[in-house]
Length: 312
Image (cartoon, rainbow, N blue to C red; front, side):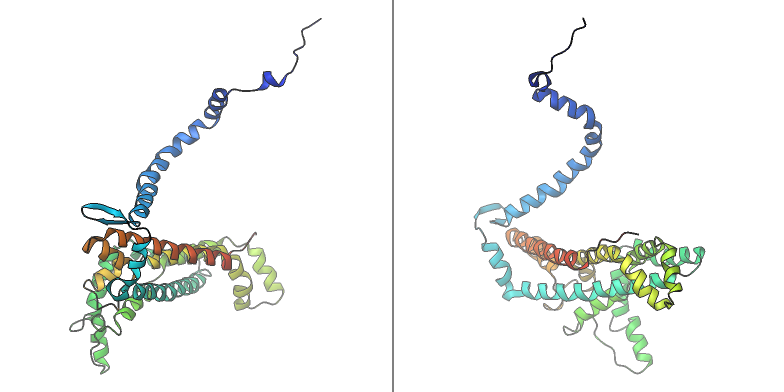
């Protein structure tokens, strides 16, 4: 009669070492490939963020920490320099709302106009709109400084042709920040065009044919078929452009490097001035975390309002 093994829970119980060994045998290579990126993220993102938060709770300067101050830096961030940080927050919110709405609308309209064209025409327009984005933001800012120049700028030259007096686009406190916003509004949102074009191309043709059979006009098809089905792309672009707008710095620094009073101050320029000009690292870190909370709050609201479960 053959031997019959008797099952027991003890025989099936694995030691911790056996579990670890089995885990690495099964998933070890996967984690080995992920490890370099994970270490890079930890060293250059996670650790600096944690250290910045610690600095925001200290009286920190060039000589290092001079003691813990708790939330005092956060209070000082709003009252230092006669409350200019509050002006910076307001300007940042205005810039974000105007530029995000403009980028989404312009990108959506241009992508919709490109979509009916043949393949080669679509490729040409996508490339034409996207290629300028490879130019450095600093170079674009320098070009727009020339366009806005009061004495010999292109914009005032064109206004002079119709008898309008020169405008101090970047030196008048009342219109300097509006000039910065105008520059951003006149920049083609290439990312939105490319992503919207891809999203529209992925919509099944059957849906449009069904709408045509029901007598829908081209505008009605665009409104009732295209817009709802590209809503996930819209959410992604809104969040992407919102984060980019909250972090605007290079454009303003190039256009108005010395500022025009407080009229062109935004949150990141305040962080720069406190951290790299006045060396008040604690206040700069506190302002950075205020910016983080603003971005996180707005992103959560946007996800709540624009999220959708689109399947086709």
